[in-house]
Length: 115
Image (cartoon, rainbow, N blue to C red; front, top):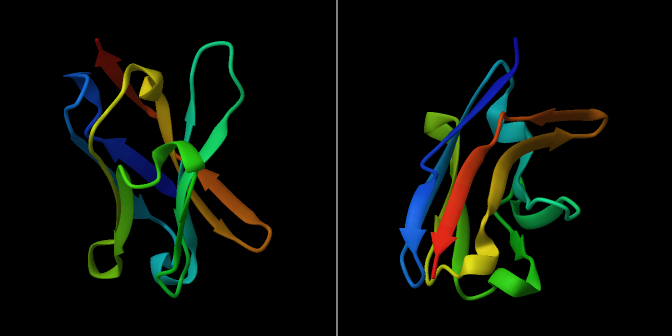
C-alpha cells in the first residue's frame, strides 16, 4: 500500500528553523514529483514547494529564500528545510506525491511558530 509519512513538525519561535521529512513507500519514488502543501485554519490549502523528477524546484512567493525542498531517491524521502520561520507559516504541512493520474497524500504534520 502507498504510504507517505511526515515527521519533524513542532513548536518553534519566530526566526527559528525546522526540517520536515516525508518517507514514501509503495511507489517507485524516483518517478514521482514531490511537493509540500500547507493548510492553516480557515484558509485554502496552498502549494509551498515542489521538486520534479529531474530535481527542478519551485516555491510559493511567500517562502522563497527561506524554505528549500530536496529529495533523496536512495532513501525514498523528501525534505523541507524551513528557516527564518514566521507566525504566518503556522499550518498543517502535507506531503504529496504525483505522477500523471496518481496523487497521494500524507497525514500531515503540525508546524506552529510563536511570536
